[in-house]
Image (tube, rainbow, N blue to C red; front, top):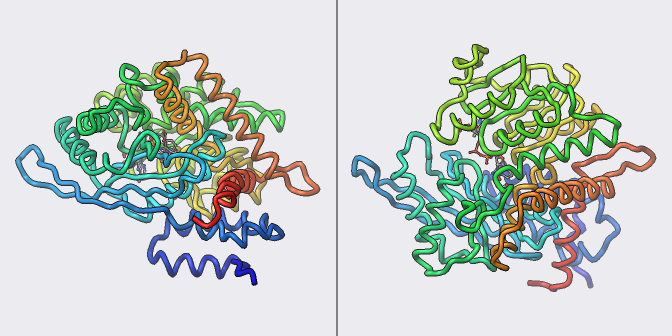
Length: 451
Ligand code: NDP
Ligand code: 2IT
């Protein structure tokens, strides 16, 4: 007799919630995938028999560890570090590290779960993982950051490796942190290997990696619009965040003729109705990466309004690109954006739009590229960085950039293939990305048997 998981989605979710109490972000991410996949596999017995979804939603392992370090005043500080290794069905675990006080197991499990499908969509041999710490980098000196990174890596290094698990950056982890982490890995292991991505160009980094996520978000937006005979040129664009993903999203939007009027950080947003141009963006990059300043300084510099503790979504705009963090755009804000005439959304951050908000956009026929498709350009170029490291050469910038463009286009096409609605030419990109991402991982798992 076949014992299958022929349960309905409510029963499936009830079990997941019971096994993972209080992990609301994780529940949200699994529900989003499961609601599409359940429908798709209704008549595909093998995925039920092998309990594929149940198994992908249980991480291979979660490593949690103490990170001690000493601050500038000599106080001993204790943080918690994690690595969630979700699935290595199609390649080594791969995904970023996040340093932020909001980090907890639920957030990292949602991110590792999402990463598994995102990485599959890239077409590269990459499994899914995520890690980080509740360490708050804000206001810390360079030395404090370095000591923290060294202590964090002193535990993490025994769990990672170029064929095992390859971390990268995420919120609060950029070029500076990757440098410190890689330096410590090299010191502890006495190996120079591609164990982290997003490295400096001098020590194995890839051209275009720092730009890749943001450029990729705009490329998928461009492809969605092109399918409807539209373009970015002349459109008013609302962007949130002012970190790595946001800045290169804005750079590419400007390049393609978009008029970007908002950017933000966790303290509020600026509204520049004349548009952020290349010169103003240079100011933001210097402000954020070199001076580690706040977006409110832009308002002083250019004489535009700054709205403290507010998010940009009440500003009217055509294209919406949330690039800061999860659940930063609510259902009510989605309704406001729709009322104000927005035509397309591309999620630069991971799961920035709340579940009910996503449904509002889809129901209103707003083009909607979900994060696992829209922001996959970053990890895709990380995958190419791993390839360059293992063959010990660096490809030219143009070559890598062309690969990014092609990978994003392929992701768009996979969404079209699996997200086309019967009897309509509308594409449900959420459904398309979930199913296309699921299939490759699921088929690999079927091939391995019960492991
Ligand atoms: P950064 O640390 O470079 O920038 C994060 C930005 O988001 C900052 O402006 C930050 O403001 C803002 N932000 C962070 N937390 C909050 C919050 N709770 N509320 C409002 N604003 C907030 O990170 P990234 O740009 O790398 O990452 C941004 C998003 O993109 C994340 O969701 C990440 O998972 C995702 N992503 C990143 C990739 C990458 O390659 N880096 C790849 C794919 C996805 P402040 O400075 O005030 O904290
Ligand atoms: O969410 C993400 O895709 C990332 N933070 C990038 C992961 C990576 O390994 O480059």
